[in-house]
Length: 107
Length: 500
Ligand SMILES: [Fe+2]
Ligand SMILES: [Fe+2]
Ligand SMILES: [Zn+2]
Image (cartoon, rainbow over all chains, first blue to last red; front, side, top):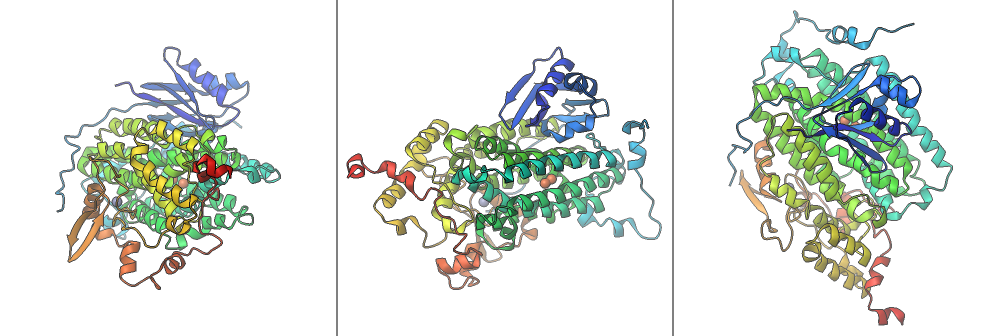
């Protein structure tokens, strides 16, 4: 299963540069960018990464990875964040036998 | 001075913990708060949040967020932007402020309980950030609404709503109590940060920002999407907790997600649905409520619960079918009982708006159009008293929303009916099988009689519409009325009559 993962970025001057950095950091991925005005959804199948170095290059200034927190209103998938890189990915799910509630329905 | 990267010191600093020697573990971490259940105590040592932040980073980032939100507010305060906002859109904001500002404050206590009773130091540390975040949210919600109180007293309900017995507030309070206050902290972590904050609150705080910005409410769009950046981080209290719970007690995990998803979905059908599909001016709507719910919930959130090994909730088909009906029924109800709300519901069924509804919801006309036609006919004939309530509808003992709104007229699969249950000599009524099921499991922690039950018990005096409104805290200057003063109905007056 390669379901989409990635950030949802709120309106900000930096959005275009960050989208460009994501594209740069994931050269083999088919990346979808959905612009809904107040937010932009960036998605790629299964895993996406984004480095501090690429953002700094795209913005043309120094960048601290924590700054991304100010414009990431949500994200799809799980996240890993270090000072140099953020990664959105899927986990390795445990298994569960049944979803059906096995509780007795009252009558 | 070069700083050591966070990764090199964070885990050690975070994992400060100690062995208790003067008191029993159970005395410090009682089961009813700590919610260990079948999870062995050692399992918590593995708990690890992945969206890491140190305290200095937190302070720097939050300062920037606050500066961003308040500088936009300050700039707009001097402009005419607010006065030019559409009356329907303003009601979206008023409903939001009243229903959420004080709930953010309640979330502070939920986070603090997690920070106190969690069984791992990393877990407790993350919840401390959550408590600080929620303090910010409560403050910003109250502050942004406060400056508008002088222009319109309905904004005062940002502060007042949860201090009243207004019926929608009773519904919201019951839902959030069940999510934040009554469960142990492990269940809370799966209910609030995982199910609610990575699922539903995105629809209210990010998706809605798209409509807000289109409607010209830059300030509101900026505020809610800024709030949600905190949620995106502290919501991770839930994911790693769910992972541990799935390993040791998957049935418990599935049940907690299932029930919270359902109660959230019911609440959003009144909190978010009418605002997106009726109050927001039609040309400003980015997507329909159903489309936003599909994007954020049926796709993104469903992917997420699958990623943790959970199954779709057992009532999934009913939930999906409900995206075509629940919020339409609730909108009709809110508009009809408009004096009982603190905003001005926009009818939203002028010919152009109706065309939009029918395009987005192909069964809308068959399900709801004929009822609006009766209302329109009454408005245009000057029979206003027939468009206003004389009684209250029967309410669901779990979600507290009107029985009948989890179904719709002319829908054979989910017909309008009550799902009753007799318990200890009392007959309870529910809007759906699912609400009844959840109530049955949780009945020992639920103590909210519905407004109707209170009315019948004689708690509301006099038992008239005026008495009920006073009991709900609605004063004449705040009571809701049609946002456009009924002018949308004029378009249905036959041309000849309109010309004369
Ligand atoms: Fe919050
Ligand atoms: Fe939160
Ligand atoms: Zn219900």
